[in-house]
Length: 564
Image 1 (cartoon, helix red, strand yellow):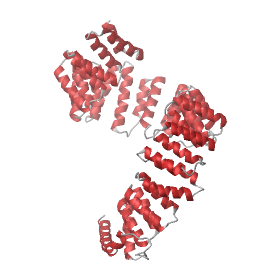
Image 2 (spheres, rainbow, N blue to C red):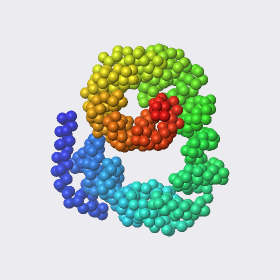
Image 3 (cartoon, one colour):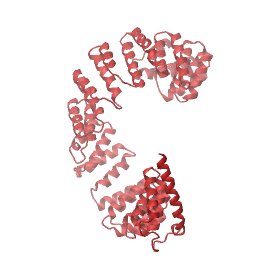
């Protein structure tokens, strides 16, 4: 590293020395003057080498300036083009424009240079300077004129002032009344500027000049979908009746049907696409997922495998779908085999927990726990999630004491984990050991002073038991200062005020929590506060609505029965 730094410093000294020689020529560029450097002399070598080193090290701004300086001194078009490219990658708009300008002046016949410069002017919002360049490009390049208007849409989308962009396009398109792409470009700019009527009128003209043009149909469908998916679907259907080979429109039609949850019709369209010119692993997967939604598992399996054959980029995702299909067929062995193919990555933990779920349901809880114990070399986060899963399995299968014993036995392995202590505390609370729960929550807070959920759990535990209410309020205030929009913490604060007898503040906090998330426990608290305030009908409505959504929730049903 010392040698590299020395060489770089040495090169910079040479650069500065040689730069002084041609300072005047470099400052004022005149493409008509002879080149200051006509061969690969020492100055050229050092500057070029310095630019290359800067580029390799990621210092694109320095590299771009050096290449531009060399382009001016050598009058070399290829170096000017390189300077433009490097400046573009550095996202230095000013340098890119200067470089592109030099490139264009050195090669007055270069369409690429004029195109790049025009794009840069448009991107910077300087439509006045871009206009003559765009007009020249469209006038001289008759073969690419139509595509030029289409490309113009994409670069104009970067202009912040959409009305200026529309005026610009209308002026540019004026000489080309008979060109469908020119009217399409106006339609696009008009829609972006919020002028839907003009957009629609220009699309009508486009369709008269070029009937059945798929690009125009796709854009019209898009404009309709922004206000009504139903109107977009009707348009796509009508278009496809006349143009049944338009796979692009068919794809958008299928997507719109899916958005409207018309899965049968969507699947029919995707099936027509699955072996078309748009065939892809993603299309195959979409057909598979729609088949799952429609409970056609055999067809789903076919297209899940097709997605794999076509090289779907994330095979573990498909393995999970296939595992679920085999599990529903009571084929536990193959279901687990698919999940075992996932060895790492984002779906790894999900796969081993899903396999354990299958084993617990088809065999036994103990077998599921043994399957989880087979996995080694896991991160602490993964081990905690597996432990959470194990305790839930035991707890939910009426083996509550064993779940607590499991946590106790694992305590030495997670001495410095606030998450473990929080989970252990919550389980202890549920099993009635509030003293242990309080101790564990305080340990979690000591390990993680900004642990909002631990502060909230401790405060809510006090409030729910109507003890140490001042301390409860203090802990929940700290939790709220960390997560002010957390609906559970807002509900806890409301419940503290309820216990303190301040029904107005209790209602404010719990109502705010309920407006964020209509959780059944929050609904139960809100119903109780409203009942105490004498707002009986409002309380009944809240409780009834929650019970309809969560008919098996014991907190809601218990609260409703108690308040009758």
